[in-house]
Length: 344
Image: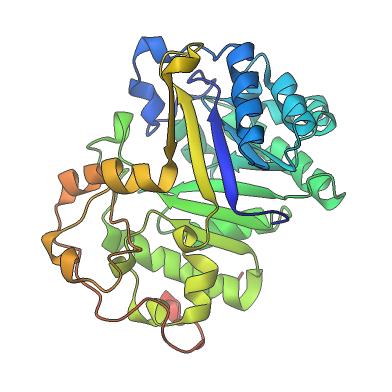
């Protein structure tokens, strides 16, 4: 990262060309589905620049479908933003000319959302046959651009951990590593939309963690990628991870994420109706929760707990207080992988 840790995520509206089964945008009011008008978006970019922000991420909806996306990127660069990132499903980047246009406008980083290394699973989750093939083509184009130094702030995949991949995370990372990807962020799926009460899609923590630890082990031994995990309550991790300062610092995403503010327009186009908030604070106060036992936890100040709707689904029985600070142990070797081997 070439600048300070403050980042603004700017919403461009909720419209998208995918229909992901777990997307919270699937249930937003119709009034929030319109694109944010160009003037309102440019004014927010100017406001953020004046406030001293130099890192800006666009999110939606789908930024590559936003009719003023190239204008917005170019405006951000003119306003002095050094880091301009797109969070996208990537499908339009299957056309390399589209990627070239965004690179020319000034994009410095792209994160592409993909949730499986298997075509049938990805197309099922996104509700769009052919999405996986489009994303793979986009990945290849983005890997090449990053290798040429044209994405100075990097290219990363952003995947959800769900019931159809939680035992295959190491295989998924290995698959994309072989295509040249060097960075992946895995977030525990937030139960929303069609996944709200789907226990097949929203597995228990106890089922997810072994796959995450296996990926951690394989990464340490072979892949050497930049991999982080998000939205996992700290007490879900085994002591061998929590007590290892190096593993905590390298893999536990919330402990190293940018300090991100968010602006979304609840009624697009009405600047007075802009909702501005800190993403970490919004997660902690409205979207996540704790068990009564968490009050006694030594990590209470840094652990956000699980998603509230996860607690509605499974209760608080998996949560327990930690009795020492996270990462206070030596940088020991990583914990053994389930099965004792990895072939990545």
